[in-house]
Length: 378
Image 1 (cartoon, rainbow, N blue to C red):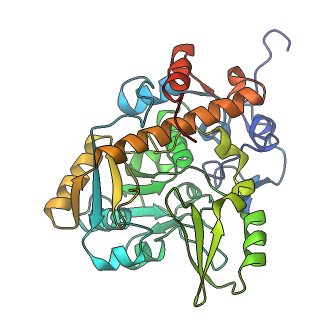
Image 2: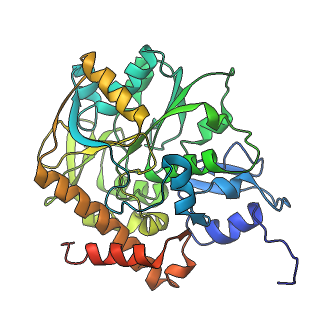
């Protein structure tokens, strides 16, 4: 490169460093910002070239070069240093008390109950959740009521462009927004918040971020082709993965329950997920996942004052109930999170080296992750 030549940080670089490397997380952060990008069946596709040297599409992407210390400083006021499950104020078990939420939920109904409560208490005026269409294709949707919340319950284990709904709106102005997202989407939100570019999205009105635990997500097109071969009835109502050691994908379609080994779907994991460090959505206000061996309960990690205040108020109002997370479950959670980080580092080492990764971490932190994850059973 000639001296003084600018490094492209626009769509050209996004295509080169993310799309062609098959690293797109389909988070939606670039969509409805750039007129040349669209989502199509679990993909972000480019319609035309763009000559901008610097763009928000590149700046907000969770798979372009990230200084993790800088992002964590912007959100928490401290560097990336808590390598197990990220910044923590409290960890507990919780579940919704209203059967409306527990019946529709993947596990304990906590996420749906908290978003519903935040709306009713005017803590937010709108939420962004991820419903699925008739063929399990997820997309972002602005929601403002309980009926819409319930329609978004459950998981398809497929990533979708949730954040496009934030960029697209429409917004009247002044709404406080709550977003539920996967770790890659939560990272993109953090990049939006901490970006030095002029903000042309309502990111400053995002008042609540609830993150979902995620080990991986599946590539929509090949996964659906696989399901349609295995499942007779295409009216799929629910997907669920049983906890270890069984690890079975349960597919409810029509009046039948199909059971498929998770090993049979691993080939559909998105390449972007294989280099992701974050299992527990560390940059959220609070993170929610399952509790192994405790059916109907969620693990909840409170990370910020916003998250703590929401949970306290919801508990006081009788919306949720909580219990301490058993020590064994906490230990397993930390091990699983560390193992995801180690696998990401191993994958990067096998594909050009950690120094070429999309994130920057100190050598000492990398050594800590590799050392503390050593001996964890896979």
